[in-house]
Amino acid sequence: MSLRLGPAPFVRWTQLCADALASTRAEIDALNVFPVPDSDTGTNAFVTFAAGAEAVAELGSEADLVTLVKAYRDGLLTQARGNSGVIMSQLVRGSLSGLPIDGEVTAEHVAAAFERATKAAYEAVGDPQEGTILSVAAAASRGAREAADAGRSARDAFSAAAAAAREGLARTPEQMALLARAGVVDAGGRVLVVVLDTTEQALTGRVAPHVKAVVPVPVEAGIDLVEGGPAYEVMYLLDGDDDAIPELRTALQKLGDSLVVVGGEGLWNVHVHVDDVGAAIEAGLAAGRPRRIAVTHFADQISTQRTQRRRRIVIAATTGDGITALCDESGAVTMPFSRTAPLSHDVVASALATADADEVVVLPNNHRYVGLFEAAAKTAREAGRRVAVIPTHAQVQGLAALAVHDPGIDFDDDVVAMSSAAGSTAHGAITVATEPGITMAGPCVAGDVLGVVSGDFAFVGEGPLEVAAQVVERLLTPSSELVTVVCGHEADEDLATQLQHHIERSRPDVDVAVYAGGQEHYPLFIAVE
Image (cartoon, rainbow, N blue to C red; front, side, top):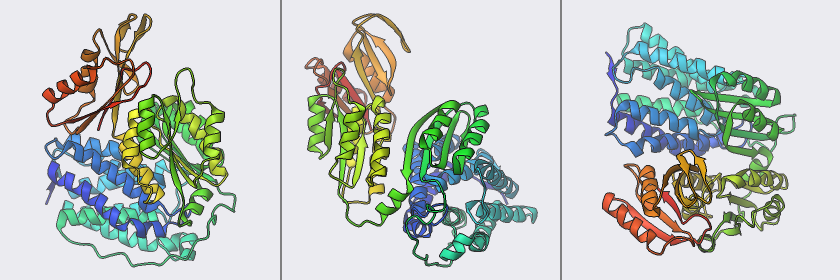
């Protein structure tokens, strides 16, 4: 008996997986002892799958299945976090790629998809270890294959894969001494079992038996950091040609361990544990364009997780008196800058070094300052401070992040929420050309109004309202809910009002908020959430 997939069930399945990982997140975090006992495997997996579910939810079940699956695959790849999140994104992406989205799914399709995904996951890991999520994936593949060879249905193949995965997870302590000593199963493998159990339940209605509970032996901070293991986790997205990836893998393998590189078609997610963070990033630069670079110092992270009460602040780089005031009102420590008074490395490093807090969230709010704050954050981490740099490239992204900041929740949860808010904020602006030139939108002369979308020139026109409306229309999507307009000191008094009326006429379902920003050179900053 075959199975046919559909948009509505797929949307429900993505949310079910995210919900299941949300409910098992703390349990999985407690199992986390390999490759580094940083107690974040469950959190990383939840964040990864929640991002995929959010990408699908934005489209809704009215979208066709091919579009939904692509959005989910892209969401998992670009938002995958940690070793487990990256490998799971590869497994799910690989499995979905192997299924006939618009046709009947048979047990043979399921088995072949699992086998292809497992092979790709093994190939993505620099030094595959048994007793990990890879072993559990291999077990699931064998279960699906046995069901297919026995002539069973596609649903039975998924059920067999889930059952085999549970058995494979139970065997992981036998395959890895570290797990046996700690008295736990592999945390990443547990993530895969949760997803497969959820899939079985969605397809058959059967609730899988819970994996035998295990109580971890307390792991001391630094257990894996005193035996010559790398001290940092480095992650980034990479825009690069596929044929550059083998050389990148080779370069990163020489630098450290826990290497995972997944993706394809010009977009890759890179994860590695190293001592030399700069060299890992330089390897990415040699292969393409790394972005969304995230660096975690394990000793600092583990120490932080064992500290109960910590003071947290947000540092925001701001331009314009109005924007600075908005950030001050939100409780941020502001660092104003302008074209004539930019932020320097010394000023940034001093701000992080002297911050009166154990936990610091940084909002650079300008693409030029992301690297500057990252470098200063590295030094601050070495001094024992926990620092997260959210790579906000625009002032409006910083405002969105501050709107969801909650100093009362866990640091990681706060950073995830702020990162999600910033990342889901599409941004643009208008400015005025001061001299003739060639832009990505075509030639311009002095006095032309330039429309900026996500940092690139997208429109050239004569009227500020005309160009601003074009920018807004480019940024809006069917799921958009709020447009924020921040006026610079060069903006005409009625420009924002006219733009607001235009938006209300064309998109009455979207709210509009207008603020006085006072920024230089940009009459309007525009954000769409």
